[in-house]
Length: 575
Ligand SMILES: Nc1ncnc2c1ncn2[C@@H]1O[C@H](COP(=O)(O)OP(=O)(O)OP(=O)(O)O)[C@@H](O)[C@H]1O
Image (cartoon, rainbow, N blue to C red; front, top):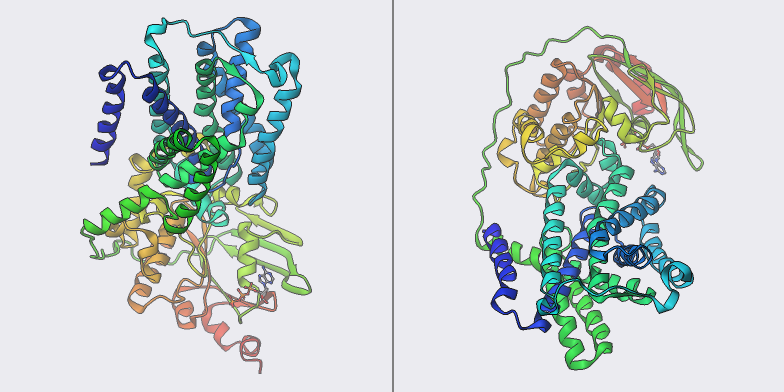
């Protein structure tokens, strides 16, 4: 259905200049809509998929225009042939800015993008020798006959738009794309499942710039003129954001639909009310969209359509594969070793000179009163927090200075006390999101087809939720979400999984399944460290049991002995 609509629109747009060749004005309006759509589609990669808003994205159009303009004026090259170099310049600039700013999380990026746009404008004004200063650069006229009017530009921009949308769609289907959405939804969690957040964000920023840079070169040729205020206009950048927000950011076709709407609106405002009215109308549209269509037009229409035509959902739960009997393995070598680890929050020492080991092949429990520091220890081991002092060794390697994703790649996975699934993604996308290594090949692998998707299906079947693969993760019950989180962490192919209160809030029937899955996975060679308050469950599932009290281990041993240990009773009951 969607494909048919898209192809239909494309056919109409491709046929338009042929059917109606003597209408340069509507052709020019459409051509500018294509240009805006190319920019909004690029913007959507970093700001829609990854959630990092850029308010200066028009800079890449200006960079492309100046690259083509300078090469054309100084070296006599036709701007059209060098337009792809404009794309390369834009990518290089994005890589430079991104690798500095996108290391950190949060709002710095937004501010820097505006600052960069203004800096580019100042630079273009002052580097007179190269750019002609505020007078700008005049480019040669198009080499084709005037009879063709703007038709060649029309098709050039349309072709670029198709390429930009195809690229964005492909990117979204890769594991890189899933990782970007994961970053938007929960960056800390994304890092813990092996997503190298810095590299993902920088790649997305660079990818978002390419087609805009190329389009900039073509645009300069279309105008036969480049100047600093035109090329690096703040209104141009705001229009891109507006187009994507109106259409629906984070979707593939939303930014395109939004660009057409905004372009037509802008044209109508200029014709009927003068240039100034355009700014007013943009402001009004922005307010209306934020208030009434916060997700944008396309997602709202899609949601309406889905309500009218609900898909039958298979709620039948599958049985866990029961093939593997649990044969407890003899405890092996230390897989995780913590030595003298401490971490304080202000005056409170949450983990206090803790030392312990988790041996290969075990399901080790970590129990202790509320606030004794168990979750903090998990955060230190997986890299969500930095220790004040001490060492963490995993599989023979010191890991306490490594970023969370590298720890994930080494085989360290975790689940959370309160599940942290990416709620806007489907269950399958959640399971596919983790990256077991940092290779480009893995990042660019197709997430919805092939090996990765096969494995995600296997893991969902393992936890008995294969029938729910296409539902939004947020629509699942809490217990089901815990199972999906387990399937998700298994995608990392971990050696050790840290489970933070797996039984908390889970109903008894799902709890049985959870225990069964943990035993099954353990029988396949995966070690577990489990924080749990449900002591009967701990006694049934775990050996050994480590008791944490006031930030460090107090006792360790088999569950029976631990239950009778007077020191442990004292710590729990304060007797
Ligand atoms: N980010 C933080 N900032 C300030 N204090 C914190 C932070 N994280 C944990 N704490 C404090 O550190 C102490 C240990 O907390 P932690 O969550 O590690 O305990 P826990 O053993 O996991 O408890 P529970 O069993 O209730 O989950 C608590 O007093 C908690 O309030």
